[in-house]
Length: 234
Image (cartoon, rainbow, N blue to C red; front, side, top):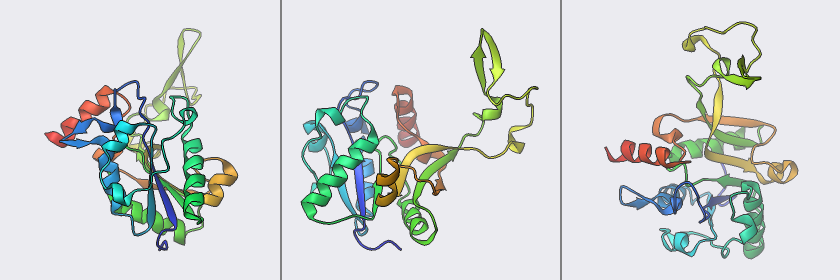
């Protein structure tokens, strides 16, 4: 198993969300969105130092468990607009934290607040995987189900064409199609060595933790938010 405090857990939460105003602190069942992720991370604090990365005083003021969190100061503007890359935010917080604590981390765990429903035991499983297997990263995935690439189309010169370049329409029942997964966005675990070498949150030897049901919800727009509220509050 992972040793104590070998992991830097980063929770990124910028303030300038466009699709949903103040998205990271919108309340769902009387709890701010970001605090679902913070409460999950606290269950992992035996193994992780936990960093809140934000440019927003308002978001930071709403964070629970502040005494258990690391805060490196407010994130600079160049890492806080809609075009900012998450990997750059991770590099920034990794460097700031290592310098501040005079230590080196072996792994990075990224937990995005927009995926609030998590089973922390699956994150613990990812710790075991990366420690015991010949891999450099673990990510959460979900089955694409009916949105299968074999059924997808592209538009070309006003006509529909098969994405997969099949000459004939693929009419195989969904249950018989090969399993295909998509990144769910809930869990990213990677060795620091691989992250810095490849400049990516997904390594060359990556394993997946499959998620189901509410765990797969990723809030990107108002419809996602309303769906989550319905699933949690009904």
